[in-house]
Amino acid sequence: MRRDVFRAAGLAAAVLVWAGEGKAADIFGGLYDHALFQQHGGESGIDAMIGVRTAPIEGWTWLAKPSVHVMISANNRVATDFAAIGLNWRLPIAFGGRLYARPGFGFAYTTGEANIGNSADLSLSPAERQERQHLAATRIDFGSKDLFEPEMAFGYRFTRRWAAEISYVHLSNGQILHQGKNQGLDDAGLRVAYSF
Image (cartoon, rainbow, N blue to C red; front, side, top):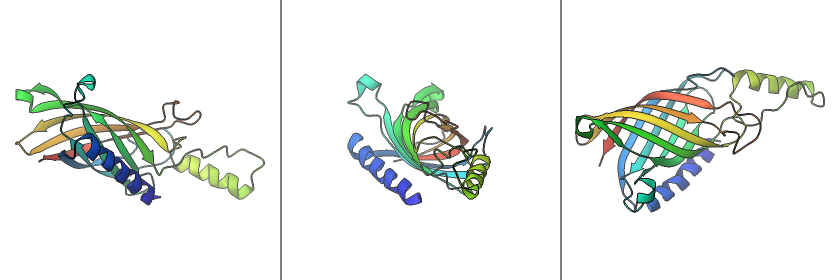
């Protein structure tokens, strides 16, 4: 399953290189609290995320010159990993732009559970019903492997090269990419960014 995430990240990186004319502006990495606002399932742990972003794409003025990001995330306790690609915008707030916001939106592919199913279905064997009950109690049911990936970060650039960002990432099918279960994932954490 993790290979699927790395394949998706590789494809996303190819798109990143194309969109950003082959120029990565930042690399970033951090640790996130997995399933921060969890009210279902029992997933927990720490997500390690790494990623890369392009410089603002000058030719995309119709989208306010976004950067393209690609990131992958791996959890230390459960097999809910993901790869994402999307757009984000660095918006100066104060101190000559050293303090900034970075909203973003993208698409993700997860190795997490999707469509666990009804454990009360009497056509299932007792073992299958028990397995579904266990998954429903311990895992997030995303409903779909393909998800939206909205995010928000606030950062501070300490030097020309180094910045730190407080970041929130959400995964959900939004009842658009799939009809049915949509439990979603909320991650929040701290990441460090290095600019080339």
